[in-house]
Length: 411
Image (cartoon, rainbow, N blue to C red; front, side, top):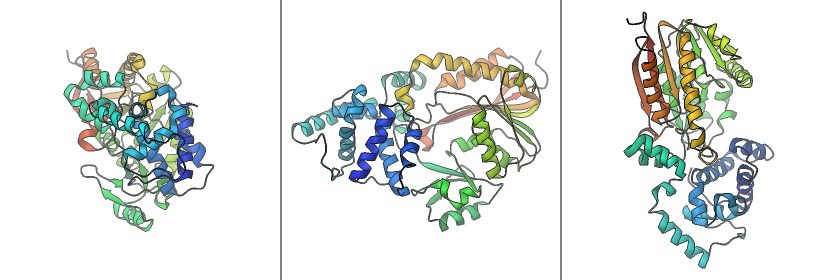
């Protein structure tokens, strides 16, 4: 959606939400929910406000630099940040008199900072120092392109639910609701949404005809090669996006065991499954290691969408890079290694496992698979691995590796 000048009301509302997310440390999605639920505003207006705040949060340090204040001083400089957003988008200022007008010396200082920032690409891409160092170490020459891609606004994608509709029916319903869309080359059953529609209020959504899911994420479930009639375990299911996709790929036949350590996520998954018509899903709470042991060598397919840094989805969740750092990465790597080692035992000999993350960093991806294979010689083989890079696809960033458990350990 093309940027437009904020009205005084929109200006104040955007500032209030930014304050809630920075001063009150409220997650952005909860900040949106808190204030949007109180107000009856049009979908286009919500979309505009979310777009402005997203632009600012993807490059918070850049806005601080241009405004000559520190990250800690954001709460008292929100008005200035919103004014800078207007200037960067070459838009006239909000009709309401700015509290900190950018004119005269203030404007000259801003233009000088803008010139200096052009020579600092990591800053212009909204990349904190810790992330730039991590990306450079992990991806080398590939990193600048990915860093830039992760600073851009995310696209919106949906996935046809083949349990409830075909593509013709979905497109017809979207057209009736005046929702713009286009096909996504290379991703079967995916559509990119090109207008600012409130997707969850659509008739097609309420009827379970589609799920909102990034196009890159939509490539993971098919990668598992699950077939109708199989016993499949989605071991880190969360609220079930990939679980629903697996159910559709399996045509509702066979069994899917959706597992997670958080019960509330599984409750949400059940509601989602009911709307999607996915009735071959069982949920199981992981209460201890015994839950996993009871499923030893029982599954034809296992999906491990493991906890990760989320560094492939920063354009969709930009606040992550301002609240995270390298200090927790070692613990995260150890968690991924442990899950892969323990949960892989649920795969039958001859069965397959997909390890996936929404990260583009090798330490969480290729190097985890390499270490696992070295620790289990003759037990597993790597069939295929795939990286989804934001700079090349326009999607979020993902990694997936498909392993097959050998029928007999090699001697």
